[in-house]
Image (tube, rainbow, N blue to C red; front, side, top):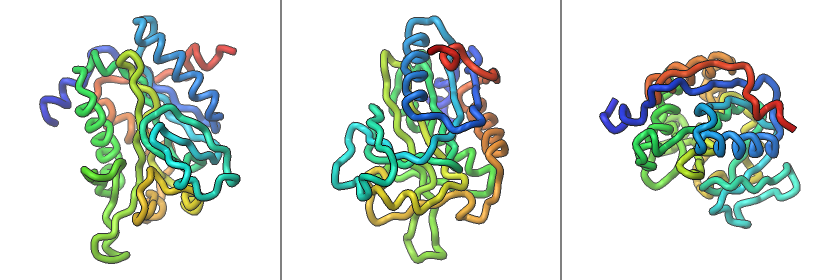
Length: 236
């Protein structure tokens, strides 16, 4: 691990919550807003929240109308994060990351790179080699069986900073319905496909993915502390 990545670690444990039922998108946004504010004020610990959403599309701050190919198919939510259109749905592990980026060195580019590295490390647990591209967001896998130079996207990433605390995060395709991506141009990138661990022949459970995410996160960002719920989840 490079020294800049080591600098992203913080001594205090990050709270780690896993939701075992699909979470409505509006509820997730509300919790992130409240928790990020509390972190910025020094009133709460940092948080990573693992969950799934019902089928939906989200529009980032750079979303283009022409990239929503099937407007009436699923609900469309304005996300407030960077990026363009993404799909979320069952079989996709979402990790919402509420971390104090200033406390972790204040280098946004290094922070995003570390998040990408976290995904790549996690995929490596299942024998999948993920890669990043300077001209394309997300994490990609090469598909030589489909033809020379063919690459598919397996993970998306989009964050927002508020008072130096990150909101939103990343999603990894474990075993979603890949046809659902056809209603958008994912992240505004045409000419490439979408894949998943299952599509690549890696049949793994969500708890197995969560275990790998926890191990690789701790290696890059520091210790975690598993909790069943957080106060924001019980507020009206």
